[in-house]
Each structure stands twice: as structure tokens, then as C-alpha cells.
Length: 234
Image 1 (tube, rainbow, N blue to C red):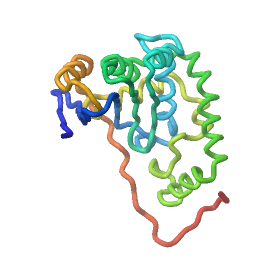
Image 2: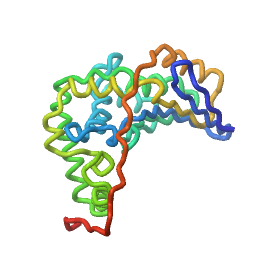
Image 3: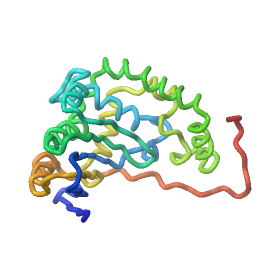
């Protein structure tokens, strides 16, 4: 049975046990995505997700996180959407405490090294270029823009290149303070794991985080009055 636990600071824990599995997955999900962004920072949520892998307080050098997860034989990745960002890893079930430590580090302790920000700009822009060259992906962006127009719900998750080029370390710190808060965060664990031990680990890692104000998602306005069509060719 799936269980939900809410800590005193508002952080949610979802446990989805499957005893027949030999693996376990840990996911940290936070309410931060493109619908929480103003036009001036469109794409920051996704850029921030990239930067989390480029160094943390505990693992400050680029490549340390990937090397540690690879050494565990784990699968791992991260993703950003309109309404949330997620960091996850999957490994042999006995390695769950270790992947919880690493995935939580991505969420809790990114350092946003200015040199890595400069390097990662090009990576993010090339990812935007890739999506622009993928019609089956790009048509979704056109559809959302057509449906919602110039508001957060109508903008690309990846953002605009001119915005990506000018974002600075202070922008990431400010945004993270507003959105990476415990009451907007969910820790999901699935697979074969010891429930009591896992909850104790999560409480140790996340239980001491103070509850802070959370900036709300921008309200989406429905305003289309007549049929319309995209002004660009896919």
C-alpha cells in the first residue's frame, strides 16, 4: 500500500513499496517550473536543474555526483516541467541510503559556481536548439503558446536563449529561496526497502529544514474568444 507522511515542516513523504523488486528509487520533487517564472527569468527552473549536478557543498567538483552514482551502478536523471522539477536515482535496494544522500544533496546544497554557470549556458542553449529541430516536440510548445499566449503557461520550459545568456548566480539563489521550501517538496521512495529505516533517514536529512514562505504559481488566464492558429510553420 502507498503511504503518505507529512513532516512538521510540511515536507511530504510518499512510500510505494514493492517487495518483489531488487531495486529502489528515490525521487525529490519540488513545485518549481516554468509556470512559476516571470518572462524575465523564463527557463531558470530548467537551468537550475542542470546546475545542481555541477557541484554541491558536499560534492563541490563537477563530475563528482555522476561518478558517485555511476559507481553505485545506478540509473539517475532530473527533469523540469511546467509545474515541478524532479531529481531521481534508482539502484540496488541495499544502496538506497546512499542514493538518498546524493539526490537530497542535489536539492539541498547546490553551490552555483559562476564558472560552471558560464559553461552550462551553452549546454542549455544547445538543448533548446535540439528541441527546436524536433518537430514532434516543438509542436507541443507551439500548441501551448497558441492556447495560453504570453503568460507563464504559454512559455517554453527551456526558456528563451536571450534570457539564458544573461542569468546570473544571484538569480538562481533568489529563485531557489522562493520555491525550494519543505512544504513545496515531496520525497518519493519506491521498490524494495525498509520503511521504518527509510523514513528515519528522510527525517534526518529533511526534518530540520525550516518552513518558509512559498511564492505561488502564476494564475493561468483563459482568454481565447475565437478559433486561432499558430503564426509559425512547424
